[in-house]
Length: 170
Image 1 (tube, helix red, strand yellow):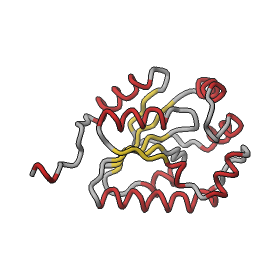
Image 2: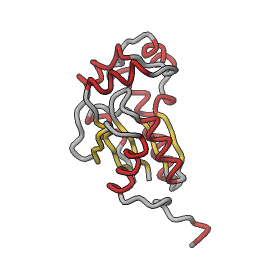
Image 3: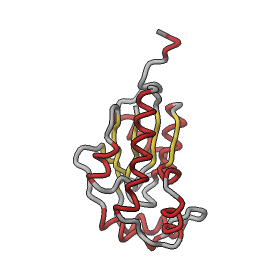
């Protein structure tokens, strides 16, 4: 199973994703690591990405999701997936979207407080403009601690430590 934690920059995708993966004993992957170097450079300079920039990134993510599903791997993927068409591209096999939802003001305050991430608050407005809130995702508000968010996700998805059975125990 692949759970895609989606939302704008600063919504907690990586923090929540790593904690969720740790609690479930699943793998964690960050979609930022699938960007080609040209996209990363644009993001570093505060230039929002367009659909044409995202096309090779989405293709790489879809291939990874297909492989994880084929190998029956359980993965938490932190990925903005802001538009419906992006989520449709990533919907393959056993995929569940979880929308990390927060207000512009809350997310902006988080971005201004954090260090060491290549995106900045300069692209937040464009991300909120691009955001098409999902109708078919589990929605979790991010105005609480990462631990509380993870607990809510686990409860809403009724998750056990292994979504795919361990073949050694069959």
